[in-house]
Each structure stands twice: as C-alpha cells, then as structure tokens.
Amino acid sequence: MKRFVASETFSQSCLNNGAFEHLNTLFNLNSHTDWPSFDWLNGLKDLKNPQGLNIRFTPNSELENETRYYEAIIFETGQVPTREQNWHDLFGAFIWCLFPKTKALLNELHIEEIEAHGTKQRSKKRNAITLFDECGVILVVDNDEIISQLKSHQWSEAFVEQRAQWGKNYLPFTFGHANYEMMTNPFIGLTGKLVCIKAAESFYELSLEQQYHYLDTQLYQMIKDGLLEDNKKMSPVPLLGVPSWYEENQEASFYANTDYFRPKRK
Picture 1 (cartoon, rainbow, N blue to C red):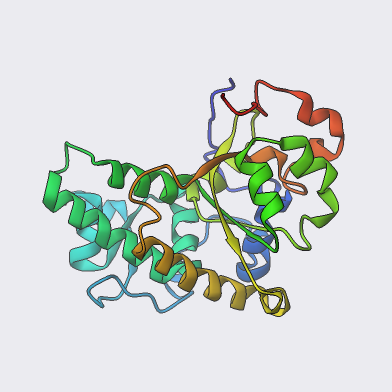
Picture 2: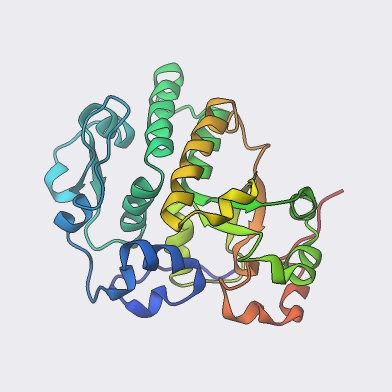
C-alpha cells in the first residue's frame, strides 16, 4: 500500500476531484491561491465549544507553552490548536463550520472519557469517537438496499449497478478531516468509516447548506443515542470507489481489485 504524504504547499490542483465539491461550493476553497489566513477561517462562522465559549482557530505557534491535552484546550478555552499551512488542520476547521453541534459534542465526549480513563488508556468509545472524527463518511440514502449492499461489501452492486443513483438519491458527505487530507493525494487503500442516514424526500429539496444543518442535528442525536459507543455501527467504505470522487473509477473494471474492494469476511 502506498504511504500517504501530504503536500506542504497549497495547490488548487489538489482540490479538483469531486470529493471537494462541497468545500469549493460553500467556502470557495479552490479560489484561494495560498493557504487561507486565520482571520479568514475565524470569520467563517460563529462557533461555540460545549461550554458556550467562542471557538477560535489558533496558530500552534501561539500555544507552544501549552501543556494541556488537545481536547482539553478546546473544552476549557475554545481555542482549537491549528498548525499553520497544514491540510489536516485546515480541513478540521471546515468540519467545525459544517458540523458545529456534532464537533462540540465529540469534544465533550472526549473530555468525559479522559476524566473516566485518563489520557493513556483509550476506551472503546473514545476509539470510536476518534475514528469517526478522522475518517467518518455520511451517506444519505432513500432505501435500505444500498445500505445492505455497502455493509455486505457488495461493491459492484453498490457502485457500478447503482451508479446512476449516486449524486441523486445517494448523497455522500465527508465528516472525517483526515479523509479530506488524504484525498488531496489519493491512493489505493484509502478507506473511510461509513454511517448511513435515511432521509425523507424533502431532504433532497434543501440547499447544500441546509442539508449540512439537517445532518449536523441528526448526527448529534444519533451520537447521543449511542452511535459511537464502539466501532460496530460503522462500516468500511473504499473512498476511491465513490462515484465522482476519483476519475479512474468510471470503468467497472476498477472495482475488480479485491485487495482494495475486499469481500466481506465470513
């Protein structure tokens, strides 16, 4: 498997595939010619942490003497430690803007787990929270068949036979900022953790911004109800298989690579 290496320079060419369509639409990300400034990032949305403090994306250089754990800094101060000129942290900021309720809840849950288990011992719940935070993908669907196919690793049925439904009745949304980072330089093996949400017909009539607001509310409640108690309610999804997210997947033969599109273990 190819080892992922993120580019250290900002390039519009990294944002050309369909995986970045939402960021380009909502934030005009691909109109930037250099790394967005912190002033620009902090002016995007009025965000709050779990304690109602203002979220502020803060350069790591201003926190070099900070000894608290990453999640504790966010929870206690509202400051989100953010590495300068860094894809991973830039996308993390966008996820805060798109899913503010859910991100604040995850921060609160991290703190609860740390208080219960410390920073060295990671519980199943905290592992699940971290995995979804980094690699989560939400798929909005209108039927149970596609959910069953994806969970059963019926990749050709889901991605090839039903290809016309993707972008129409099957709408993918990225939650994990690590997914975004790795899609700037995609490689065979890139896999996300999938959560499917069935939506009413009215969802498809919403604007993109309204859809994110709806999903943020739904996801918040699902996590409250136990979605991330462990990893069992998430399933793997090969991200390069998502139609429009990777140019080479236009041919059905792309999905014949069983080292990547692995069958379900019996």
